[in-house]
Length: 558
Image 1 (cartoon, rainbow, N blue to C red):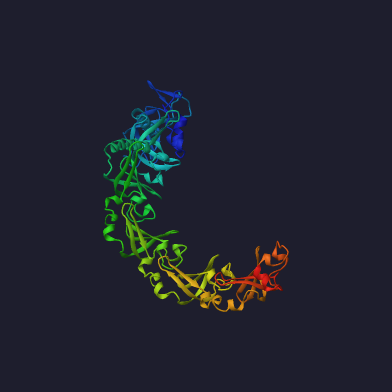
Image 2 (tube, rainbow, N blue to C red):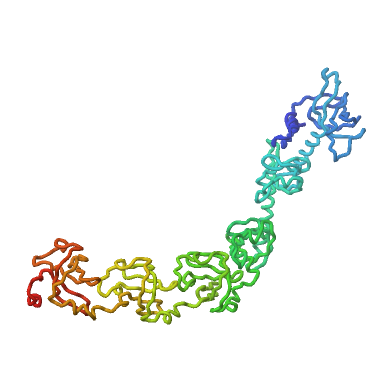
């Protein structure tokens, strides 16, 4: 006998526990004597069909009055009830109103509930925890699926449908599946099953067999189960192996999805096996010969070839010569003359470029390429185009502490040193005479083709006055007028004429000891001085202020 309240729960059907609640009966229900026996409410009886109409079927169960069963309790896929059929029914309640003794009125029966109870009891007799059962997925409910096992709905949680949870578990509806019985809950009267646990058991057995036979170098077929940025996981039939992105193709690929798709069958080679950690490395590109095997023969050093820029870094650009073969054009090999601060100034991914093979390292699979080598090195012609003594025009490109760089042709600079800027003026920084962007003419002093250097001179554009009129115009003992141009800690420089300066040492400023020249003079002051000496070798003129007005003998003695 079955508890009346639990039987009624079956009629609701929407709640998960109600779908699963099939209770085994307890005692204590009302009993009615019928002849030599008794009829108990919620007991399963056998009855005989007496009459069939559109709404009800009348059944005799040995009671004075017949019981009625709704006609719709016969499923469409089973034979229609016929008079004389013997059927099993559940006695739900007596509908008499006159007491037990009178035994009159109809009784309510249920064929469907009787079948459910029998199905439950039959399943409970034959199914135990950890048994493998086959069922039919009837529908999707909150949290999982209902699976019909021999007429009993059992619960398959969504997390137990597969090893990796499907996007929609509803896709399993209408399918026959095998599951492992995880738990039979007598208290709540339900059964929980797992398809995942069964798959894992089967995989564990297959994994054990696979690990015993798997060897490095073997070629295996597998199914792609998952894709990540770094590669794809391939099911070899019991264990997953990692197919890294770098082992998918000899050519450069951006993402594994360019090569494989989930559920795709692929042929892979076993590259490495870690039996302790049960990790397997797989490769696809190893199924074909490496293009690097013939690189040295196909691209000997000096070969000019076409390639495609595939990546640009701060130190150079990678150029693809063919699938799986890339070389590096270092930033220093991009131009003979241009000052390239970043390769992106000259190339971008996708550009077709002409390159020359400079070197090959087959072991490291590296090729050094050059772009500038496809053109003539302009420095090879510099010696011929700019011989010493030639007059060139240029633009001041940059100023440094020691001179100015003059661009005399596209990408070809010459150095104008501060010592070659003026015959007479002491230049401590090129900004005293030049500004960036100035145009000027210079003379080529020398060319070092190997070190790619050109020395230029500005003062050489005129004759050296120190070998001409300066010694004749400035003689020791002469008193001349000038202007203070610069003050230092050791003295002051006096401008005697355009570009010509003499040094007035601090000791020659006054007969008194002078600690700081700025106490007596300042830049721009006119001053009268006496020439002490003229050194044409050192190109220097020594001056004195304190000796002005003295006789020449005093100067000579000093």
